[in-house]
Image 1 (cartoon, rainbow, N blue to C red):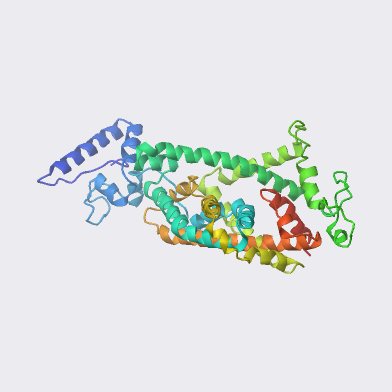
Image 2 (image 1 turned 90 degrees about the horizontal axis):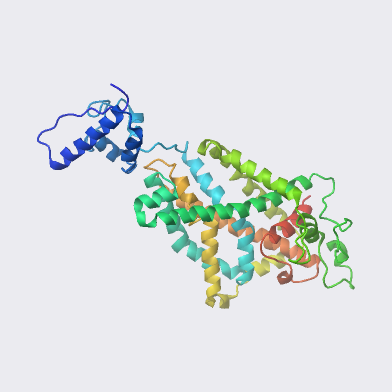
Length: 424
Protein backbone atom coordinates (compact mmCIF):
# COMPACT_ATOMS: atom_id res chain seq x y z
CA UNK A 1 0.00 0.00 0.00
CA UNK A 2 1.40 3.40 -0.92
CA UNK A 3 2.31 5.84 1.83
CA UNK A 4 -0.60 8.00 2.89
CA UNK A 5 -3.14 5.78 1.06
CA UNK A 6 -6.25 5.47 3.22
CA UNK A 7 -8.02 2.16 3.75
CA UNK A 8 -11.56 2.32 5.08
CA UNK A 9 -13.24 -0.31 7.24
CA UNK A 10 -16.85 -0.94 6.30
CA UNK A 11 -19.30 0.06 8.98
CA UNK A 12 -23.06 -0.39 8.63
CA UNK A 13 -25.39 1.23 8.97
CA UNK A 14 -23.75 4.56 8.01
CA UNK A 15 -25.15 7.84 9.22
CA UNK A 16 -25.36 10.86 6.95
CA UNK A 17 -22.31 12.37 8.65
CA UNK A 18 -20.29 9.18 8.10
CA UNK A 19 -21.33 9.06 4.45
CA UNK A 20 -20.23 12.67 3.94
CA UNK A 21 -16.92 11.97 5.67
CA UNK A 22 -16.39 8.92 3.46
CA UNK A 23 -17.02 11.00 0.34
CA UNK A 24 -14.37 13.45 1.52
CA UNK A 25 -11.90 10.61 2.03
CA UNK A 26 -12.73 9.25 -1.41
CA UNK A 27 -12.00 12.67 -2.90
CA UNK A 28 -8.72 12.71 -1.01
CA UNK A 29 -7.75 9.31 -2.45
CA UNK A 30 -8.44 10.56 -5.96
CA UNK A 31 -6.30 13.65 -5.39
CA UNK A 32 -3.46 11.51 -4.06
CA UNK A 33 -3.81 9.08 -6.98
CA UNK A 34 -3.62 11.80 -9.64
CA UNK A 35 -0.91 13.74 -7.81
CA UNK A 36 -3.03 16.75 -6.91
CA UNK A 37 -0.95 17.56 -3.86
CA UNK A 38 -1.94 21.24 -3.71
CA UNK A 39 -5.60 20.34 -3.27
CA UNK A 40 -4.55 17.75 -0.71
CA UNK A 41 -2.61 20.29 1.32
CA UNK A 42 -5.48 22.76 1.17
CA UNK A 43 -7.98 20.10 2.25
CA UNK A 44 -5.87 18.85 5.13
CA UNK A 45 -4.95 22.39 6.17
CA UNK A 46 -8.63 23.16 6.78
CA UNK A 47 -8.69 20.71 9.68
CA UNK A 48 -7.45 21.70 13.18
CA UNK A 49 -4.03 20.41 14.17
CA UNK A 50 -5.54 17.81 16.48
CA UNK A 51 -4.50 14.12 16.60
CA UNK A 52 -8.09 13.08 17.41
CA UNK A 53 -9.56 14.89 14.41
CA UNK A 54 -6.74 13.67 12.21
CA UNK A 55 -7.50 10.04 13.09
CA UNK A 56 -11.22 10.61 12.57
CA UNK A 57 -10.50 12.11 9.17
CA UNK A 58 -8.37 9.07 8.33
CA UNK A 59 -11.24 6.72 9.17
CA UNK A 60 -10.52 5.53 12.71
CA UNK A 61 -13.07 6.08 15.49
CA UNK A 62 -11.62 8.76 17.82
CA UNK A 63 -12.63 6.84 20.94
CA UNK A 64 -10.88 3.60 19.96
CA UNK A 65 -7.14 2.88 20.22
CA UNK A 66 -4.99 3.48 17.18
CA UNK A 67 -2.95 0.42 16.28
CA UNK A 68 -0.96 -0.05 13.09
CA UNK A 69 -3.31 -0.20 10.09
CA UNK A 70 -6.41 -1.77 11.68
CA UNK A 71 -8.59 1.16 10.68
CA UNK A 72 -6.61 3.48 8.51
CA UNK A 73 -3.85 1.55 6.77
CA UNK A 74 -1.28 3.85 8.43
CA UNK A 75 1.80 2.16 9.81
CA UNK A 76 2.97 4.53 12.55
CA UNK A 77 2.37 7.87 14.25
CA UNK A 78 4.53 9.69 11.71
CA UNK A 79 1.88 8.96 9.07
CA UNK A 80 -0.73 10.58 11.26
CA UNK A 81 1.36 13.76 11.06
CA UNK A 82 1.12 13.61 7.27
CA UNK A 83 -2.58 14.34 7.62
CA UNK A 84 -1.70 17.61 9.38
CA UNK A 85 0.13 20.69 8.08
CA UNK A 86 3.86 19.99 7.93
CA UNK A 87 5.49 21.80 10.87
CA UNK A 88 8.70 21.44 12.82
CA UNK A 89 8.58 21.21 16.60
CA UNK A 90 10.85 22.43 19.36
CA UNK A 91 13.14 19.63 20.50
CA UNK A 92 12.09 20.25 24.11
CA UNK A 93 10.15 22.67 26.26
CA UNK A 94 13.29 24.51 27.34
CA UNK A 95 13.98 25.68 23.79
CA UNK A 96 10.53 27.22 23.54
CA UNK A 97 10.75 28.93 26.94
CA UNK A 98 14.21 30.32 26.18
CA UNK A 99 12.99 31.60 22.82
CA UNK A 100 10.15 33.49 24.51
CA UNK A 101 12.41 34.83 27.27
CA UNK A 102 15.10 35.87 24.79
CA UNK A 103 12.47 37.73 22.78
CA UNK A 104 10.78 39.47 25.71
CA UNK A 105 13.91 40.48 27.64
CA UNK A 106 15.60 43.21 25.61
CA UNK A 107 15.74 46.96 25.11
CA UNK A 108 12.37 47.39 26.77
CA UNK A 109 13.88 46.14 30.02
CA UNK A 110 17.29 47.78 29.63
CA UNK A 111 16.41 51.40 28.95
CA UNK A 112 12.64 51.88 28.67
CA UNK A 113 11.71 50.56 32.10
CA UNK A 114 14.23 52.73 34.06
CA UNK A 115 13.28 55.79 32.02
CA UNK A 116 9.53 55.29 32.53
CA UNK A 117 10.11 54.65 36.23
CA UNK A 118 11.94 57.99 36.45
CA UNK A 119 9.31 59.75 34.37
CA UNK A 120 6.39 58.27 36.33
CA UNK A 121 7.41 58.97 39.90
CA UNK A 122 10.22 56.56 40.70
CA UNK A 123 9.48 53.37 42.61
CA UNK A 124 5.73 53.99 42.69
CA UNK A 125 5.75 53.00 39.02
CA UNK A 126 6.28 49.40 40.16
CA UNK A 127 2.73 49.29 41.56
CA UNK A 128 0.81 49.85 38.29
CA UNK A 129 3.44 47.91 36.37
CA UNK A 130 2.93 44.66 38.27
CA UNK A 131 -0.84 45.16 38.58
CA UNK A 132 -1.22 45.45 34.80
CA UNK A 133 1.18 42.53 34.35
CA UNK A 134 -1.17 40.34 36.40
CA UNK A 135 -4.52 41.45 34.97
CA UNK A 136 -3.51 42.15 31.35
CA UNK A 137 0.01 41.01 30.48
CA UNK A 138 -0.20 37.38 31.59
CA UNK A 139 -3.72 36.69 30.19
CA UNK A 140 -2.93 38.28 26.82
CA UNK A 141 0.35 36.39 26.54
CA UNK A 142 -1.52 33.17 27.33
CA UNK A 143 -4.06 33.89 24.57
CA UNK A 144 -1.36 34.55 21.97
CA UNK A 145 0.48 31.35 22.84
CA UNK A 146 -2.79 29.39 22.78
CA UNK A 147 -3.69 30.71 19.32
CA UNK A 148 -0.28 29.79 17.90
CA UNK A 149 -0.16 26.34 19.48
CA UNK A 150 -3.74 25.41 18.51
CA UNK A 151 -3.53 26.45 14.87
CA UNK A 152 0.13 25.60 14.27
CA UNK A 153 0.48 28.71 12.12
CA UNK A 154 1.99 32.18 12.18
CA UNK A 155 0.02 35.33 13.06
CA UNK A 156 -1.51 35.82 9.60
CA UNK A 157 -2.64 32.23 9.13
CA UNK A 158 -3.66 31.76 12.78
CA UNK A 159 -5.91 34.81 13.03
CA UNK A 160 -7.25 34.15 9.54
CA UNK A 161 -8.22 30.62 10.53
CA UNK A 162 -9.92 31.73 13.75
CA UNK A 163 -11.70 34.68 12.17
CA UNK A 164 -11.16 35.51 8.48
CA UNK A 165 -12.43 39.03 9.14
CA UNK A 166 -9.37 39.74 11.34
CA UNK A 167 -6.76 38.25 9.02
CA UNK A 168 -5.49 41.78 8.42
CA UNK A 169 -4.69 42.05 12.12
CA UNK A 170 -2.10 39.32 11.73
CA UNK A 171 -0.63 41.11 8.73
CA UNK A 172 -0.50 44.36 10.73
CA UNK A 173 1.45 42.63 13.51
CA UNK A 174 4.00 41.40 10.95
CA UNK A 175 4.41 44.95 9.61
CA UNK A 176 4.91 46.28 13.14
CA UNK A 177 7.51 43.59 13.83
CA UNK A 178 9.36 44.53 10.64
CA UNK A 179 9.46 48.20 11.62
CA UNK A 180 10.65 47.34 15.12
CA UNK A 181 13.35 45.05 13.76
CA UNK A 182 14.79 47.88 11.66
CA UNK A 183 14.98 50.07 14.75
CA UNK A 184 16.44 47.33 16.95
CA UNK A 185 19.05 46.52 14.31
CA UNK A 186 20.38 50.08 14.54
CA UNK A 187 20.76 49.75 18.31
CA UNK A 188 22.57 46.44 17.78
CA UNK A 189 24.85 48.20 15.28
CA UNK A 190 25.78 50.75 17.96
CA UNK A 191 26.56 47.89 20.36
CA UNK A 192 28.77 46.20 17.76
CA UNK A 193 30.64 49.48 17.26
CA UNK A 194 31.29 49.70 21.02
CA UNK A 195 32.34 46.05 21.01
CA UNK A 196 35.12 46.58 18.48
CA UNK A 197 36.15 49.91 20.02
CA UNK A 198 36.57 48.33 23.45
CA UNK A 199 39.52 46.23 22.21
CA UNK A 200 41.80 49.26 22.62
CA UNK A 201 44.16 49.32 25.63
CA UNK A 202 42.41 52.43 27.00
CA UNK A 203 38.68 52.88 26.56
CA UNK A 204 38.15 56.02 24.44
CA UNK A 205 35.19 57.22 26.52
CA UNK A 206 37.10 57.57 29.80
CA UNK A 207 38.99 60.84 29.19
CA UNK A 208 38.73 64.15 27.30
CA UNK A 209 41.97 64.01 25.28
CA UNK A 210 40.46 63.05 21.91
CA UNK A 211 39.72 65.19 18.89
CA UNK A 212 35.94 64.79 19.26
CA UNK A 213 35.95 66.24 22.78
CA UNK A 214 34.85 69.83 23.41
CA UNK A 215 35.92 72.37 26.06
CA UNK A 216 32.82 71.39 28.03
CA UNK A 217 34.19 67.87 28.55
CA UNK A 218 35.24 67.17 32.13
CA UNK A 219 36.51 63.98 33.71
CA UNK A 220 34.21 63.12 36.64
CA UNK A 221 37.08 62.54 39.09
CA UNK A 222 38.36 66.08 38.50
CA UNK A 223 34.96 67.66 38.17
CA UNK A 224 33.81 67.09 41.73
CA UNK A 225 36.91 68.84 43.12
CA UNK A 226 36.58 71.89 40.85
CA UNK A 227 34.49 74.71 42.33
CA UNK A 228 34.61 76.81 39.13
CA UNK A 229 33.39 74.04 36.84
CA UNK A 230 31.13 75.09 33.93
CA UNK A 231 27.42 74.46 34.39
CA UNK A 232 27.21 72.86 30.94
CA UNK A 233 29.83 70.23 31.74
CA UNK A 234 29.60 66.95 29.83
CA UNK A 235 31.12 63.56 30.56
CA UNK A 236 33.55 61.97 28.08
CA UNK A 237 31.09 59.08 27.76
CA UNK A 238 28.37 61.40 26.53
CA UNK A 239 30.67 63.18 24.09
CA UNK A 240 32.00 59.91 22.71
CA UNK A 241 28.47 58.74 21.91
CA UNK A 242 27.23 61.99 20.40
CA UNK A 243 30.38 63.37 18.76
CA UNK A 244 32.26 60.21 17.79
CA UNK A 245 29.69 57.43 17.31
CA UNK A 246 26.74 59.45 15.96
CA UNK A 247 28.58 62.62 14.91
CA UNK A 248 25.43 64.63 15.55
CA UNK A 249 25.27 67.82 13.48
CA UNK A 250 24.26 71.25 14.78
CA UNK A 251 20.80 71.08 13.24
CA UNK A 252 18.54 69.54 10.64
CA UNK A 253 19.85 71.98 8.06
CA UNK A 254 23.27 70.31 8.40
CA UNK A 255 22.59 66.65 7.48
CA UNK A 256 26.24 65.56 7.64
CA UNK A 257 27.81 62.62 5.83
CA UNK A 258 27.38 58.87 5.84
CA UNK A 259 28.76 57.02 8.87
CA UNK A 260 30.35 54.12 7.02
CA UNK A 261 31.55 52.47 10.23
CA UNK A 262 27.96 52.27 11.47
CA UNK A 263 26.81 51.03 8.05
CA UNK A 264 29.31 48.17 8.30
CA UNK A 265 28.15 47.40 11.84
CA UNK A 266 24.52 47.42 10.67
CA UNK A 267 25.36 44.93 7.92
CA UNK A 268 27.06 42.74 10.52
CA UNK A 269 23.93 42.91 12.66
CA UNK A 270 21.71 41.73 9.80
CA UNK A 271 24.18 38.95 8.95
CA UNK A 272 24.06 37.73 12.55
CA UNK A 273 20.26 37.74 12.44
CA UNK A 274 20.26 35.83 9.16
CA UNK A 275 22.51 33.03 10.40
CA UNK A 276 20.52 32.83 13.64
CA UNK A 277 17.26 32.02 11.84
CA UNK A 278 18.25 30.72 8.39
CA UNK A 279 17.29 27.14 9.30
CA UNK A 280 14.19 28.14 11.22
CA UNK A 281 14.06 26.68 14.73
CA UNK A 282 16.91 24.24 14.02
CA UNK A 283 19.40 27.09 14.08
CA UNK A 284 17.58 29.62 16.26
CA UNK A 285 16.95 27.09 19.04
CA UNK A 286 20.68 26.52 19.51
CA UNK A 287 21.39 30.25 19.46
CA UNK A 288 18.76 30.81 22.14
CA UNK A 289 20.81 28.95 24.74
CA UNK A 290 23.40 31.72 24.47
CA UNK A 291 21.29 34.80 23.73
CA UNK A 292 18.73 34.03 26.44
CA UNK A 293 21.19 33.23 29.25
CA UNK A 294 24.20 35.50 28.63
CA UNK A 295 22.26 38.75 29.29
CA UNK A 296 21.33 37.51 32.76
CA UNK A 297 24.96 36.74 33.55
CA UNK A 298 25.93 40.27 32.50
CA UNK A 299 23.05 41.81 34.45
CA UNK A 300 24.11 40.01 37.63
CA UNK A 301 27.75 41.10 37.17
CA UNK A 302 26.83 44.75 36.53
CA UNK A 303 24.29 44.71 39.35
CA UNK A 304 26.85 43.48 41.84
CA UNK A 305 29.36 46.11 40.74
CA UNK A 306 26.88 49.00 40.65
CA UNK A 307 25.73 48.36 44.22
CA UNK A 308 29.31 48.87 45.46
CA UNK A 309 29.78 52.22 43.70
CA UNK A 310 29.95 55.40 45.74
CA UNK A 311 26.65 57.25 45.54
CA UNK A 312 24.64 54.18 44.55
CA UNK A 313 22.33 54.74 47.53
CA UNK A 314 21.46 58.15 46.09
CA UNK A 315 20.08 56.59 42.92
CA UNK A 316 18.35 53.73 44.73
CA UNK A 317 16.67 56.17 47.08
CA UNK A 318 15.25 57.97 44.05
CA UNK A 319 14.16 54.70 42.43
CA UNK A 320 12.38 53.25 45.47
CA UNK A 321 11.11 56.53 46.91
CA UNK A 322 7.30 56.29 46.73
CA UNK A 323 5.39 59.31 45.52
CA UNK A 324 1.87 58.00 45.96
CA UNK A 325 0.27 61.06 44.39
CA UNK A 326 1.59 59.87 41.02
CA UNK A 327 -0.87 56.95 41.07
CA UNK A 328 -3.66 59.43 40.34
CA UNK A 329 -2.12 60.38 36.99
CA UNK A 330 -3.48 58.56 33.95
CA UNK A 331 -0.10 58.74 32.18
CA UNK A 332 1.49 56.56 34.86
CA UNK A 333 -0.97 53.73 34.17
CA UNK A 334 -0.70 54.24 30.41
CA UNK A 335 3.09 54.01 30.61
CA UNK A 336 2.83 50.86 32.75
CA UNK A 337 0.50 49.22 30.22
CA UNK A 338 2.67 50.24 27.27
CA UNK A 339 5.77 48.92 29.01
CA UNK A 340 4.11 45.57 29.69
CA UNK A 341 2.98 45.07 26.11
CA UNK A 342 6.27 46.29 24.65
CA UNK A 343 8.46 44.25 26.97
CA UNK A 344 6.56 40.95 26.81
CA UNK A 345 6.03 41.32 23.06
CA UNK A 346 2.24 41.32 22.93
CA UNK A 347 0.75 42.34 19.60
CA UNK A 348 3.86 41.72 17.49
CA UNK A 349 2.91 38.22 16.33
CA UNK A 350 6.21 36.68 17.40
CA UNK A 351 4.77 34.83 20.37
CA UNK A 352 2.15 33.28 18.08
CA UNK A 353 4.93 32.12 15.76
CA UNK A 354 6.97 30.66 18.62
CA UNK A 355 3.98 28.74 19.98
CA UNK A 356 3.09 27.38 16.53
CA UNK A 357 6.16 25.10 16.79
CA UNK A 358 4.86 23.52 20.01
CA UNK A 359 3.24 20.13 20.16
CA UNK A 360 -0.53 20.27 20.31
CA UNK A 361 -0.81 19.08 23.93
CA UNK A 362 1.93 21.28 25.42
CA UNK A 363 1.00 22.97 28.72
CA UNK A 364 1.38 26.65 27.85
CA UNK A 365 0.09 27.89 31.21
CA UNK A 366 3.38 27.02 32.90
CA UNK A 367 5.30 28.60 30.02
CA UNK A 368 3.26 31.79 30.26
CA UNK A 369 3.88 32.16 33.99
CA UNK A 370 7.60 31.44 33.60
CA UNK A 371 8.11 34.00 30.83
CA UNK A 372 6.08 36.68 32.64
CA UNK A 373 7.89 36.11 35.94
CA UNK A 374 11.36 36.25 34.40
CA UNK A 375 10.46 39.37 32.41
CA UNK A 376 9.14 41.21 35.48
CA UNK A 377 12.11 40.29 37.69
CA UNK A 378 14.54 41.29 34.94
CA UNK A 379 12.96 44.74 34.65
CA UNK A 380 13.29 45.20 38.40
CA UNK A 381 16.95 44.11 38.49
CA UNK A 382 17.88 46.31 35.53
CA UNK A 383 16.12 49.23 37.22
CA UNK A 384 18.20 48.73 40.38
CA UNK A 385 21.42 48.51 38.36
CA UNK A 386 20.61 51.57 36.23
CA UNK A 387 19.63 53.84 39.11
CA UNK A 388 22.60 52.74 41.23
CA UNK A 389 24.92 53.70 38.37
CA UNK A 390 23.09 56.98 37.79
CA UNK A 391 23.44 57.79 41.48
CA UNK A 392 27.20 57.34 41.18
CA UNK A 393 27.35 59.65 38.15
CA UNK A 394 25.21 62.24 39.94
CA UNK A 395 27.62 62.20 42.88
CA UNK A 396 30.67 62.63 40.64
CA UNK A 397 29.06 65.52 38.76
CA UNK A 398 27.79 67.06 41.99
CA UNK A 399 24.26 67.20 40.64
CA UNK A 400 20.91 65.53 41.20
CA UNK A 401 19.65 62.28 39.73
CA UNK A 402 16.98 64.18 37.78
CA UNK A 403 19.69 66.00 35.80
CA UNK A 404 21.65 62.86 34.90
CA UNK A 405 19.12 60.38 33.61
CA UNK A 406 18.05 60.53 29.97
CA UNK A 407 15.62 58.49 27.92
CA UNK A 408 16.12 56.48 24.78
CA UNK A 409 19.37 54.95 23.58
CA UNK A 410 21.33 57.59 25.51
CA UNK A 411 20.65 55.69 28.70
CA UNK A 412 22.41 52.66 27.25
CA UNK A 413 25.32 54.27 25.48
CA UNK A 414 26.07 56.97 28.04
CA UNK A 415 25.30 55.49 31.44
CA UNK A 416 26.18 51.84 30.76
CA UNK A 417 29.63 52.46 29.24
CA UNK A 418 30.30 54.59 32.30
CA UNK A 419 29.55 51.55 34.45
CA UNK A 420 31.70 49.36 32.20
CA UNK A 421 34.64 51.74 32.61
CA UNK A 422 34.44 51.32 36.37
CA UNK A 423 34.64 47.54 36.25
CA UNK A 424 37.84 46.28 37.96
